[in-house]
Image (cartoon, rainbow, N blue to C red; front, side, top):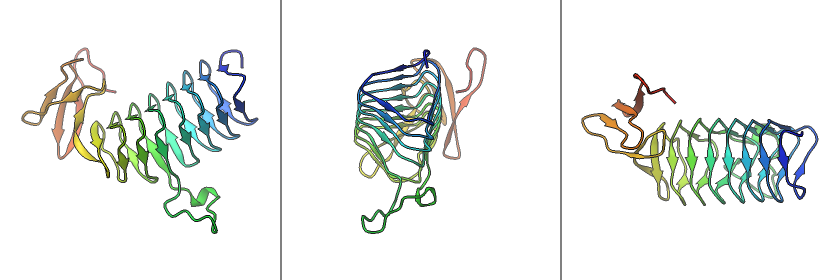
Length: 199
């Protein structure tokens, strides 16, 4: 455990797995069975439930709870106080407390979720998508899509680097990093070419 940092105020339960280079800050709790990859950063007051799978280089900001049924792939960003749910019809008198009761939520590689956003369980947030602060996501988010509002709707497209794209004649070039994109049948795809690798 010498290659990871865990603040003395945090609780890391036996049976959890934490990759090298990961940092876990004040008052956080990682439950048994959770799997956290390499080079992750968990801010203050972060809760990781049993059975959660987190990839490499994931950044989870302060006051975020990642409940059972949530999968975060590599390079995901979770903004401060954003919320995941894992049961669509919760009842105190009729507990849903087995893995069969939980709806799977998947956040794919490179996606970002803004502060105070809510992700209703059972959705997939696509590769490199961007969910705006305060949004309430109730349906799948396509790769590279920008979603905002309550309920969240698509407002545009974003580059892998996070820059908002302008689509002209089903094509876009990122003004920040020069990645090239094509829009086909409602899906944005990165054009792989010389000097640019697909994310």
